Length: 379
Image (cartoon, rainbow, N blue to C red; front, side):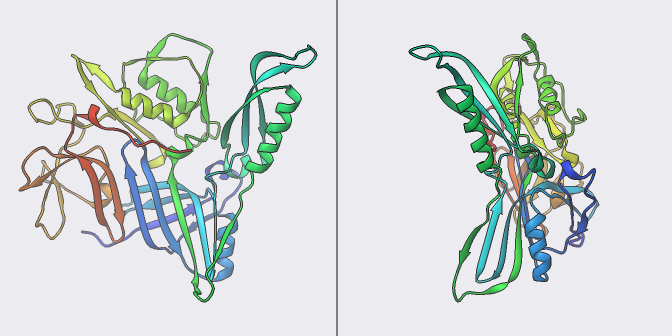
């Protein structure tokens, strides 16, 4: 195996990169990352040490920074944004995150006409409030709220109050007296699939149906932050008839996950599809790897099955063409045979890499893809 040449670079949040030229190659430790079926690049973390002033600056400005991990071959093995920071100085631990932050509030309510006695309820309507300063820094992050019957003025006040509260990013603090530690900053990342749940997808201009893969492309194109690549390079055609009309304030990635779960049916056989956001923030949408009823890999599989030996000291993964797959090349949606273990191969659902390139993977021997469940992505 090659040397542990992991390179991690940081840049400004994607939405700010046209004006913010910040870029830095990081010196890190305690690195790990996770890649999951239905998400792609999922989560990662590393720790930075250094002068207190440097760590403080990172803590103040580091949220949503764009982070790219490159492997010894120069490929991207993880890409995501900073979701959470924890600064430890002495006995103090400060933590902040964008998880609960929202800088666009969409408030749905039923209009109430108080000119009548008694007041009468009208149509359902919506008021939207934005904090453009936060949006320019981090990107638009939407929360959908629902209220009961109220006047337009009341709804406007409620939405504005919610925005003023939710746009704040507040630090929490824990002090452990007598247990001081060296200054450090723990950086937690999320993959860009999670940012696809920063917006809702509604399309009410047309009805009827379209190919499932066309709806995936439409959702990606609706990203108000233009963070997700609209490239169809890794989006395979799926002709499953899918509704074009969406009016439920559904989150972007939730829709794509739902379409992957619906899969594709041909000859009365159903195939679940795999989805994920990978390198260059491109979405993969493809038929999941699997076996036919005779336990033979589908002819349509895109990847050769991998094989590994339990007692192989090198922990090598070898495909059926004889090529060794490096740890940084491993992904979910692969079939792995373990030599000496009878039965079906494992369908990989999650890969975790802990430096220096220690591999942990989860999977199932139920490689009929329709039997698998995709893990939900939280906003």
